[in-house]
Length: 589
Ligand code: VG1
Ligand code: CO
Image (cartoon, rainbow, N blue to C red):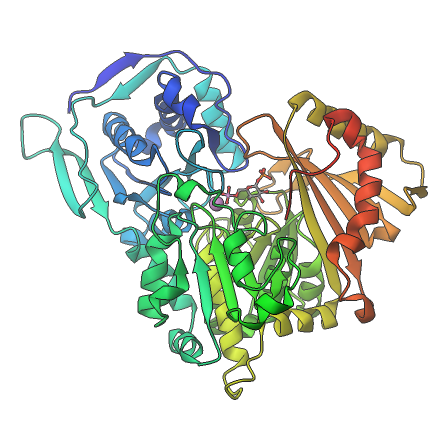
């Protein structure tokens, strides 16, 4: 285990974003030491924590995944780690890494490195990402990512065990390397572990598996799960087919591929278009009557690293904001929540629609609103166990960006969300005769009837000039500073605005500038602007548009029609065209 010290120089721009460091594959491959510098900076930031510790490593299977695994193993050995757990074939989903850190050998790992750029395309022309998760299984908090960034600006030497042979990732097993010629003194161990076992052990007990099997066996129930050639495919067959008894034909794109089959592994109306069509929907999420007649009862999709989910009914699109609200409203259908006597806390990210707020109020459960990105949910889930404060677990949380999860791990979890929805359908249909299945649409409409409908869309302006994007945010900031009271804008009443700031009630951590909010019609309408922290080229402006409707006679309106006036007003207030030269969003989800 000879350690080589290789000189290096800091590389600009290695600042982790919303969810780790994401760059073009060509940047990782074409910049000497790009990955090595970031890994060394991470280990430098961890300092003494590396010594004798266990590290988890795995990724979503995209191009560069296994190359990176081998580099990280060699560097971990040289930086004092005693052991690395690597997923078989280098594969681990994001929620699986979280489960392994938390549970394997009683939580023996200090943290984990996840190789994923999530929903961004992969391959030589796509993206690569690297993310560090801490000992609670969740994304590193800002204090840690800031420290990594600071280290990246100062790194001058890489520590690598260059002579360590490549790990054989194809088979589970354990390899010991020795610190010296003295074979009695093992210095470093690599264990190639099952990609799926720890995850399944964390997830399946959350649900009543026999009830799910009964649902799947019903003649009038059919479902399709699209893994989009991401890592979810590695989990889907053992969970949906083996554990729940579904026919293997229900799985689409279930083989993880380095380029995701050329697709964009993002489970939304735009990119999961094959599934959307199969479920009897138009690309805008409207019901296509003819196609819906023969569509399956339930459809779902995952992103590259399997932490996102999209939920579809027959001819019916469930917005992610509605999804988390429906799960909260139906908590009794979910064993994990039932066993604990109910939910003790719920949360959403700020741009997520306010549907969850209404449900939380009706349940009398504490509800939190956090900045975008999963790391902010973790401290609330750890409130009692780590910080000795009030217990909010079991906890349910979600984001508008097709992320839903609970306190069984510290990441969003796409498969958990699908099983939660199936549990709701199973509970609702425990007694229904064949042929009269209570549907996904029925369950959502029931929530609307109680709490109102939040019409919702996200408009993304991708790859805009970074200067223009910042200028647009400054224009809105100036609007907030100058706001003098309600006025008409593009025919709608513009009634308030602010910039979202957050103070974590558990840790006291603060986050400024987390999004500009514009309120319309006394708050029933809301538009949020923020800049994405996960892109790899230029800037992406996200515009989140929401209108809360309490009048049931208007629930069937088309979301795009309902939201059009708000979109027009927001475009005018932000001077979108002037700052970006764009007339229209790149993608609407
Ligand atoms: C996006 C989403 C955010 C999500 C993040 C990571 O971030 O908006 O809700 O938590 O991706 O998801 P941003 O900064 O681009 O808006 V994933 O599935 O990439 O880990
Ligand atoms: Co993801």
